[in-house]
Image 1 (cartoon, rainbow, N blue to C red):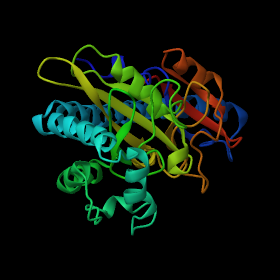
Image 2 (cartoon, rainbow, N blue to C red):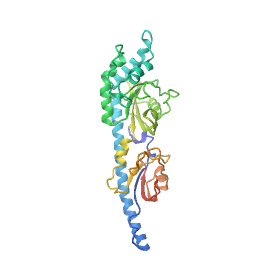
Image 3 (cartoon, rainbow, N blue to C red):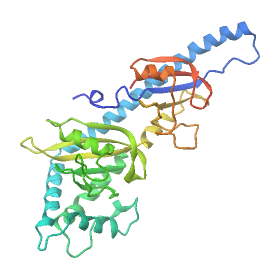
Image 4 (cartoon, rainbow, N blue to C red):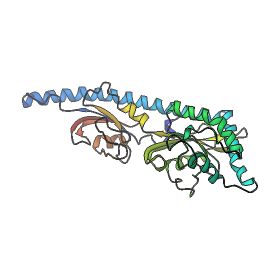
Length: 327
């Protein structure tokens, strides 16, 4: 099924492409400047529109690639088996004699006693405890493969969540590991990941993808992150869990900070419906995502679904030629 129509990102992230408007203002008379300025504006706007279209196509292709990877992975027999076996392994802790707290046991093994520091916990493949569980044995088998998939696709994390909302597996083993993402669940249930999970759990057929726009994600130190999630169905068409990925802003920054055809003064970036940037400015040393505001008529038109161009003031207070298109 189509990708962009299913995403909340559609018509929320106008791609704003900017270039300097002060190109022919020095050393010319007023009449010459007015004529020259009009010509330069028209030429620059055409160039900006071309760049905006290129960035939009590049972004759409990027998202489609991520969607395809997630949907194909969730449909694969090995992922179905892995989801089922992690779910079974999770439940077996309660059947041991004496019963064990699955959350306490997994956090002790993969977070508290992990020999690797936070940010590198994904390097632990095998729980060396002599009383390893079936969950541990499965982890030692599939974790290297899932870690490789995460790294090769540029995800910040990859997750399996069961039908009750429990995060029964994650690659990175951050503080969200083993917490619950059902409505009213754990500490992070109201996060972008929680919303993506609950949307995916309502799907009725394979191939549908839930997308959550960039927002600060506490388990990643507040890093702006977006999430994609899709339901995993068994052979009978029953949902057995959700596979999800965390997408950091770095991948978008790489695309947006490309200077091709923009010159020394131009840049491109995304703006959300709240007028906050969804990618970092190439002119700023600070993090602009979800911090820097950009509110002007050109962007407002794009937020309303219309392409727009004009000379306006940017977030730095500089006069710029701007072109914005809805994505």
